[in-house]
Image 1 (cartoon, rainbow, N blue to C red):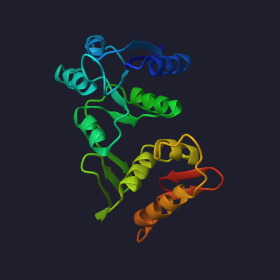
Image 2: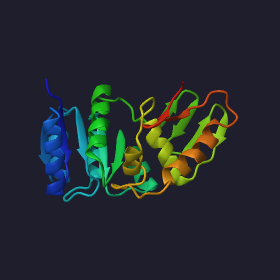
Image 3: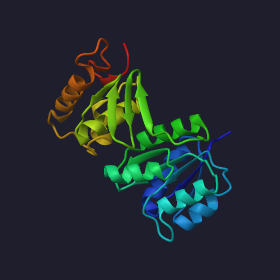
Length: 226
């Protein structure tokens, strides 16, 4: 049986692009273009996941999500928004979303994140902490620690680590990092990734017995144990 998702997106070109992609991936897709219709459509809790824009006519995405959670509708929700500052992401998570992806986005990543939400089913609680062995990242407080040791990260380093922790034990390519962390949809021809990976590796692994951040020669990087 095909998984059923709801896309609430007011930009018709973007909405059609998303709907086409999920249809080709075997999902059943319903599409609405304003917040009020989105709330009405989602209120019966029949969807496996909801892709929700933040800035919508009639009723904004945050209001839609808060109304759904107040009505005990626990369908997994991923915000898809041009509002990409850390404050916006935190606000979305605090409102009850299960994930947050910034525009512009790579459809492959959106599909992967929705598949993960669907596999988890209707989450009973909002995930605000990501872990990898003894490494912990708190999405709300923006704090990172390994074991009992606090790790201070710059904003871009935090975003890089968050991306890697959402793909634990997976090989993450340079292209994925350029799109997911830097919002580049082209190769800038610089060593920006190497510099940030090197800094992050020193902060995560120096002084610890087991390295967590690995370079996969010719492929990319992987966060996880040996």
